[in-house]
Image 1 (cartoon, one colour):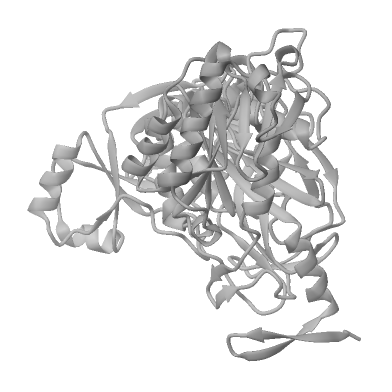
Image 2: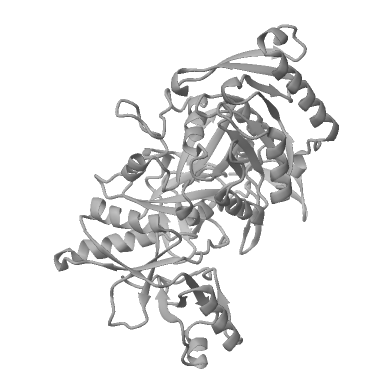
Length: 557
């Protein structure tokens, strides 16, 4: 019999809270969930490794471009990632720090994989915007910032590579405020830069942290802390740097933005941190402040209204699929963000899209490529479920009354190519590989409207996506393929489907294909051709984002 223990105010009056809800509430208070967004080469994978190092999840951090004698980065588990030194797939890293459980959603750093980042941000409660202190805002960072703004999630800014020559800190803050329309609050402040970088001043505790370099930043940095006003500081910091620090702090206090936690949670004010992930300067200070300021798992919009995390029934949604994380077992994993209730091993859930009942017998805790069976999980956590072809990106699973969370749309690709299988004897592994890579969203798959033409069309945001598909088909499925580029750069979905398209009649300067769900898509060589069609046929409503699909199975490859 369920025990009811107290009353809490609710929008509809007062509601009873059970022991289970109290347990969930306590777990939510300890959860922090975030994704890192950045431009390529800003140091995202390095920062990820150092956060794991300080969290005690790893004992030694691996540089991205590791030598043969060094360990590889934990978050970059795919062989191609290790070869190129970039993140090309998102993963999840869960670790504990102090009394908190942190779910770090690692995202691809390369712009060609921005759609994978969009999906990951749908599961994040907070975002860390990582910037190179020498370059400031870059195109990919701006693009991903807009996604965060659409969701109004808190954004934390970390200026990296302060141990190298960089731009003036005040100039970097002004750039964020002017170009992004986002207010800034410097939580700590750098002392020098480049080879004169001496550490940071923590405005929260009014302390100066002077750091000593560790070997390649592989282990935690030694931290010498002094209270502001300690006479030793003038002996340890060069006079010109100390005077500059005093002047800049005085300026921040006089004209800088005031700290406002509500504005942070609303995505209107970004706390700013300075440091060097490679040498560990400022990483632990950032982590400690993040735990204090970050938004805890909150309500999620669903088909039945806002769902609070302490709602006693379990629910979650699939935001990523990944095939062959363990090539030896040809596994397929669905990444599920827990939204409400308590997840328990062997529980039975409903699959909203199909209406089927599923028993989740081997849930997994994810840590890069490594996994272990877990017994339970709470809102804000990410769990891995074996996927025998049942799950699709955006699917909702739940117990209790039926609900569905907002779907995750596909975005307009810009590069298109026919994928050919020159070896007929490899037809089955070719079809299986294309199907599984399509499921996980590695690339969008389209087909000719002429049913006689069966070769799939790969549709991607960037060229590297196509190269990864070819690489994985060969390495994971044993299939060599050929790519034949198509002369299109713009795709638009037709609002209303095939019926609307048939009423319009013949269209010029465009090619009609169908997407994975059998819906019509118009391909254009350029924006000029698109505008011409829109002017000639104003009754034709075209969308750059694919409509979210519910209750429909994809067409066969």
